[in-house]
Image (cartoon, rainbow, N blue to C red; front, side, top):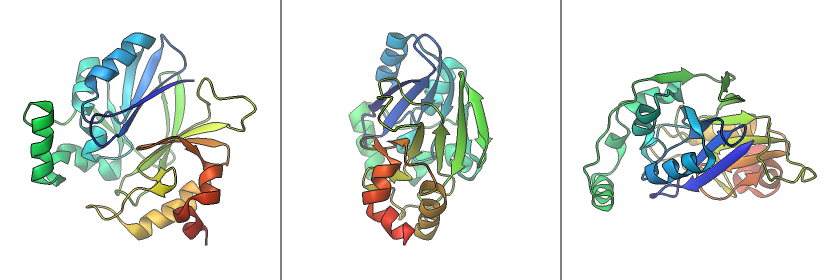
Length: 234
């Protein structure tokens, strides 16, 4: 599986492109702030054709560019039903000073239009698009509708003898050494701890974790050293 990731221009939100191979259809995950130019370059370099946008949750730093991406390619945006309301206007929850900073940095007024085609997904749903199959794992806590996307394929270049057997796109549920914050609107620490216990710790050690921010990791590594997982495990 071809996996290309790069950080957005603000908040270092990871945007990922997933495809069976170069020259095929692809899935775009979490197109954040200021990603359009880099995204166009990656699509051209690997000759990829977007089939859909997957959103791990509805925070502005993960969905800021979803509407222009969906509109340019005529593809749907997939988000969990509990976070669907956020696509009405994710900017309204941002601090006005932050919105002003974004406007100064990108030279235009921060505005929002919801994508024309929004498809709500549910826990356990199997999404078959772009020649890939991913399973939706609802893991609330960071937001009500935060999800992880589980694929039973491994990115190209990962050593066959390295013990990696699957790929988990974790959004802001799980980071290398940490987790997503729960003090924002819609966050719930108790729900996050339940998600860590019942949705993250139940994943196989061989899962490669591609988080919403920061470097990749593995479930095995996080199970052994992530303080939040150690607390959830008890």
